[in-house]
Length: 117
Image (tube, rainbow, N blue to C red; front, side, top):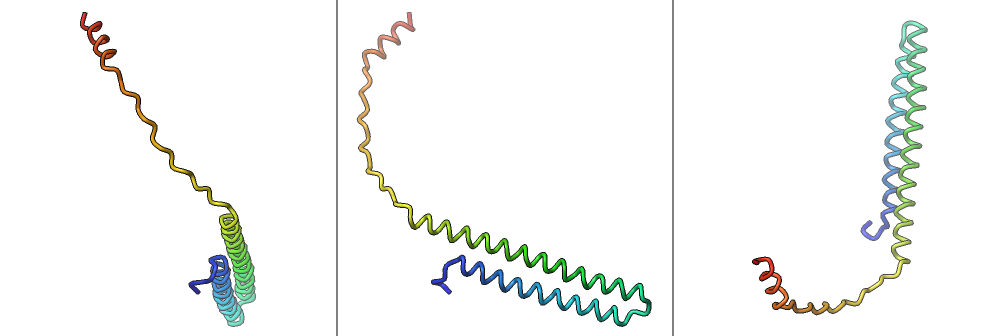
């Protein structure tokens, strides 16, 4: 896995999370359906069935958003790596430091003399 591109790893992790999320959602749906079957009144049974249906709808939507986000990130990463690989590297030649001009000492001393007067 050390040689794998990160976009492949991102997609793989998203698939694992998707599978785990849907497994947990199905377990919860089955639990609510079991409670609906054991319910003593029709209203309670209908409420548990509605909760089971809502659980699957919400989990499916969350899994879809998770998958889309992972695909977007993986595509973005792959695109960035292709651009980075195709961009030529510009090597700048080092410039020699410019020589500083010597400051005239006479000019400074004349200004100091004028300020003193």
